[in-house]
Amino acid sequence: MAPKRTTVRDLRRSNRSTVLSKLFFDGPLSRHELSQLTGLSAATVSNVTGELVDDRLIIEAGLVESDGGRPRVLLRVDPNYGHVIGIDVGETGVKVELFDLAMNRLAAADHSMTSPRPDPGEVVEQIVSGVNEVLRTSRVEEHTVLGIGVGVPGTVEHGEPVVVHAQTIGWEGVALEQLLRAGGITLPLFFDNGAKTLGQAEMWFGAGRGAKHAVIALIGSGVGAAVIANGTTYRGSTSSAGEWGHTTIVYDGRSCRCGSHGCLEAYIGAEGILDRYRKARGGRDIPGTDEQSQLDAVVAAAVRSKTAAKVLEETAGYLGAGIANLINLFNPERIVLGGWAGLSIGGRLLPMVRQVARAHALRHPYGVTSIELCQLGPDAVAVGAATLPVAAMLDEGADPRENTAAA
Image 1 (cartoon, rainbow, N blue to C red):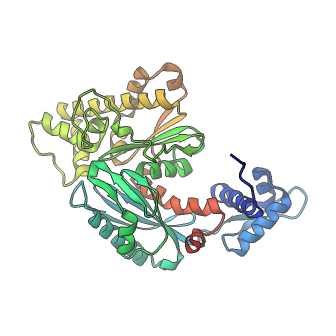
Image 2 (image 1 turned 30 degrees about the vertical axis):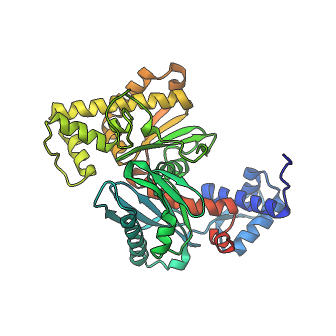
Image 3 (image 1 turned 180 degrees about the horizontal axis):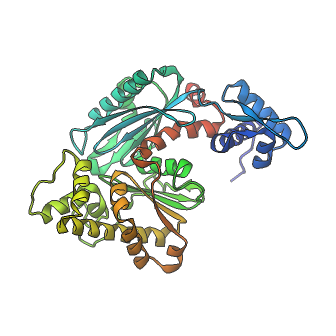
């Protein structure tokens, strides 16, 4: 295959992307620091930052003393240049959050689902309603929004249009992008699997920051993971890599909602935990109005109930064994547990999870792996979704709406 020819336009975009990304993650920085950190010449940095200032993407952010010369001007990405919206489509509800470009949360809306297997039409209604709500409450004008990122359960097929395959909730080839356009959304849309948006959020701002090889696990009603290899999310041939919840932990074990048996999700996902606890109690109801409140009730009951304590200890065991599999397969530096159920279980039983993982993993890879909790809390999927339009901006070194308009 002939090597791809690099044009002046490609080089310009690459330089803008490099400078803008460095300022976004590590700014404010002076032009001198940018040159040192990026390896670009002083002249190139001067030209690129001049363009970015003219485009209003970056602004001056004060002065810093230099060695004997004039104070150097610090630069940063302008947090007021625009806004981004992140949406977490979960199996218990839809969370919509609005941010500025410094990723300060300006408004949020939470809408519950009527079913753990929601109809796509209901999801679209909740998204549209949530977007309108955060714009209204924040008094942010729609034309300032660079894009909307949407984290969804299942696999995202990036085509024309974007299609979502979420077998566990009954979505087979749902054209979610078309449905949102029909529902009135006109802003640029970006889609990814919710575990992968969680992974990006934690790698950018949370417990994964600084790691090159990591696994970020999402445990909610279902279970997924983002596998980070050499700083890049591994997606596989059809972007379905990371379905950790549907690896087999018990041969011919409990039935899973995917249709198989013995999946890890059937043991450590919230739905599986609650079902096991319910059966251990002879079918009695669990206090609470939804899965989150019910799981909270189980965790609270563990201090006085042997049944609850046993179910949670078993869950920690299955989780530790599942993490050992990740360690043996991927040899990560770091494993981060997130998702509302992961935080609930991990917050109580992380020492036991680590102990079981150590017992089941190979000694050397376990010894170089840390197992930690997500730092961004239950909003991490929405934060990660909001980074999707930001990532497009950093990759292009320009406003992502320009490319959308050109398309």
